[in-house]
Amino acid sequence: LPAAVLLKDTKLMDVKLGQLGSWLAMRDFTPGGILGAIRRGHERYYNKYINVRKGGLGGFSMVLAGYVILSYMWSYSHI
Amino acid sequence: VLHTTRPLHTTQQSLAPVPPLPEKGGEVRHGLIPEEFFQFLYPKTGVTGPYMLGTGLLLYLLSKEIYVVNHETAAAACILTVIVYAIKKFGPDVAAFADKLNEEKMASALAMKNDTIQTLQTAIEEEKKEQWRAEGRSYLFDAKRNNIAMLLEANYRERLLTVYNEVKKRLDYQVALQNLKRQKEQDHMIQWVEKNVVQSITPQQQKESIAKCILDLKALSKSAHAAV
Image 1 (cartoon, rainbow over the protein chains, first blue to last red):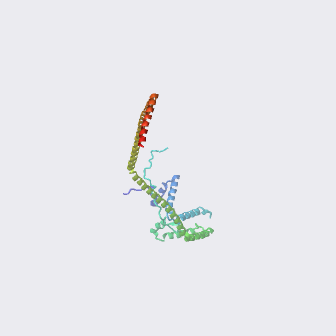
Image 2 (image 1 turned 45 degrees about the vertical axis):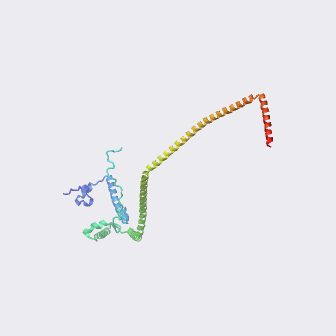
Image 3 (image 1 turned 90 degrees about the horizontal axis):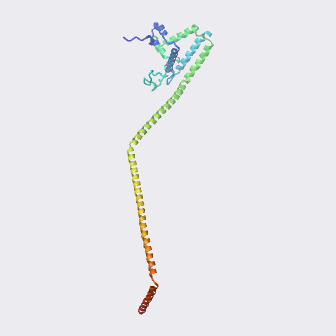
């Protein structure tokens, strides 16, 4: 019988839909935790798409597209 | 304040050697959507799934006016066309240039590393050679010992010679002194004897000796006349 993995340690893709609320609730929302989450996300993206030998266009253009969409969302009411 | 209860350096250093960079980054399709998205939808919808999703999303945004078509749309379309054309045309050249720069950096770093390794190797060999040289120090010390012994011997003999010469000089001096003394005594005695003899010749004796000499001379002359 495999030991049950704590909800705290499961990754987002393994969380069942019903557990999503409780999973979100027990995340670390302190400033240090948020900063750590930002850093982790940045490192993941950076090491996957930018910090490689032969990087392509996608690494940078995805960030640009995300910025475009975000700014459109923020300025939607002005249109 | 140093917290001495905290353990220091318990694990092996994990910073070196640094793992090499991956060759290629994550795959991105059309420059915007990561490949993982297509793989995520492949089991359920096959190859055309994501494109269908994209088309549906686009039509939904357009029809519900969530995306508004205005002058900015035209500007965006023109700009995007130009950008895509430029990338398609000049992309590979720029990529080759960047790769060349990277290669040069790597080559210089590698050359530096190899040079350092080479220098250290030669240093190791030099050190070994020095160690081998140090083994011969017994011969060196033997030669030095021989030299010193010879110096000592030569010095000893010089001093012996000096002593001999000095002693000889002193003895010669004594001998010369004695000789001189005897000489002087002899001379003095001879002079004294002569003086006394000359003094003892009285005038009477002188006349007698002169008369005797004249008689002898006459006798001699007679015999000489006869011989001639």
